[in-house]
Amino acid sequence: MSENWATAWTASAQGPYPHGRETAQPDLSSVFPNPDQGAYSQSFRMIVRPDIWGTQARIRLSNAHGTMPINFESVFVGQQLMSSAIFPQSNREVSFNGSKKVTIPAGHWHTSDPVELDFIKNTEDPLLAGQKLAVSFHINGRSGPMTYHAKALQTSYLSDQNSGDFCASEEEIAFPYSTTSWFFLDALDMKMDKPAKVILVFGDSISDGSGSTINGYDRWPDVVARRLNAKYGNRVSLINQGIGGNQILGPQGDTFPEDRLGGISALDRLDRDVISMSSISTVIWLEGINDLGFSNASSDDIFDGINEGVKIMRQKIPGVRVIGSTLTSALNATTSGHGRRTVDKHRRTFNDRVRSTDIFDAIIDFDEVTIDINDGQLRSEMVPNSSIGGPGDLLHPNRIGYQAMGMAVNIDELLGKQN
Image 1 (cartoon, helix red, strand yellow):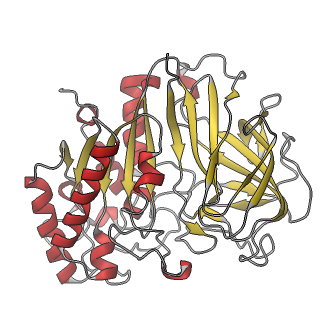
Image 2 (cartoon, rainbow, N blue to C red; image 1 turned 135 degrees about the vertical axis):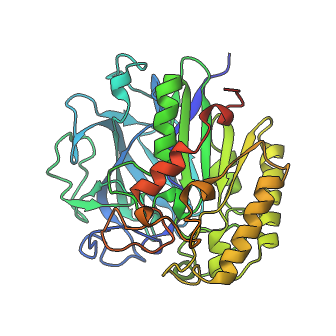
Image 3 (tube, rainbow, N blue to C red; image 1 turned 60 degrees about the vertical axis):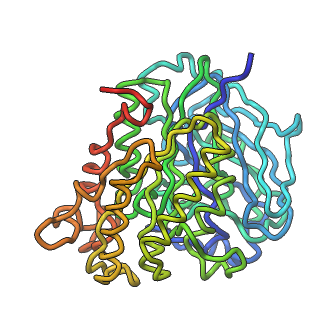
């Protein structure tokens, strides 16, 4: 009988720190004085919120954007209490191929052995919804460039450089520094008693949550996840592989990190961020505005790129449902070239193709619920930034906008069911 592993949390490996699109990142210059050299003999405590819960977990550590092997040791998973503290007697040591340490070469990632979550007594307990795990690991020696997901919108914690190994400790004192990024950790699976379905959101900053609130979990995928959990309980997981600034078609793989803050192209990261995840049943793809805004691509260009990606996913994930999405307005946006009328013209043409094509199993019309039909911009109440304040940029919806997007999704249709 096959094991029922399902991915419960993800954070796409965006690039080497600090070359990403961060939100409300504290000043980490004293923690990582030289980003090219990275971490040095220090401990990380990454806080993550699984969307479903199982009897065992396994984590994936990534050195996808590194330039040298990294020695990870003293890896633990426990239930977060608050801040960087862990619930007493919940911290469990994680192994890799039976060893308490693992060396990951540059450009690679490694999945751990299963670890028992024996501090969870009932995986169906509705009170687990929203609970978080603390994944701690110590880097022995120098890491070199650090693979990270810039826009976590979740506070995690770091120790001083060369301060020792504190991963087994359940106390908070050894992790004095906070970060709003996730470092090295890019996936967490749960072992389920019965097969679970996993819905993967694939896209850019609109899915990554730019403009939503820190620690608020009010991106549109979070809204959909809560709706799924309310209806289907611990049987459906929604994971988010959005990257702020990501493009479908570019940039080229040899582009310098400082010139690809949105990570490698969506087509280039399909295998790493979609195909390799566990129990994927549905992919929602919302992307293309950055190709129009950054690269002057046409609506035909981005639609052709999505068509290519859909074919790859259907070939490599038999039976997968692929859900297409219209692009929300960026007209008059203050970011880069997104606000131009030529971009909006291509966006509207692309949306018309999404609404009429037969390459998807279903579509979600995000444009319809966010656009002001009088001026073609985002609706005024959806513009002010929810994370850092200010007037907003007319590209990224705020908490109100993401709520509207999340409520526009037919959750039964995601699973291939009829209302």
